[in-house]
Image 1 (cartoon, rainbow, N blue to C red):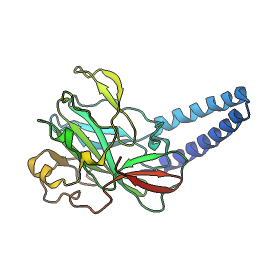
Image 2: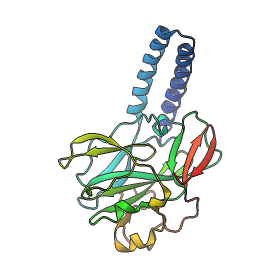
Image 3: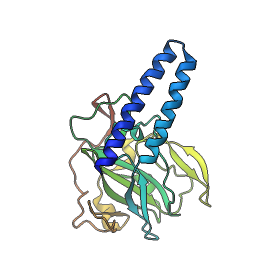
Length: 254
């Protein structure tokens, strides 16, 4: 994470937040024409932020060996990327045909940065979604992703799309992408993220080969298997979904 990225990111967030506050005040005052001009300026700032997001290695396809990189705001949770209701993101240019979904977890460092939107970073420790990982031929890959001062884990799923089985909302959002069998995007779907659907005991899945992992800081993103040496096993933490807003954190099983 370069100083140049952090500086540009900080400037865009400050300018965008200033413009949004100004536009909302004008809307509240009934000056919709002036507000519209400010919102147009904000859209330009938003576009610049979206393009600034760095491509971060989050997985490697177990079937083809292709590296999966995702545009993620690694500067902190105060970036609009992490706004669960209205995330500012862009999709990767290319995903392997076997890619299915990506969710995640984050170990929060205190104090949490303040922001007005709601962030849903996932639980405090990595996990797998049982209804997905139990399907024949599906594997998950866990990779550590630093998010500012916080420790994140991307959890990606690969395999043939299971019939009649909902996938999982994209990390930090409330929807997931739906593709047809040819890989053509069809729209969005969503699931309620219930903790009862998660399995935090990764060891059996690692032993079975259903879960693979990437060593933290491994620039080659080499896939590893088994329990020995895996840093994601048995981590202490709150096994509930986290919510963050205005510097406060709360937990829920939904």
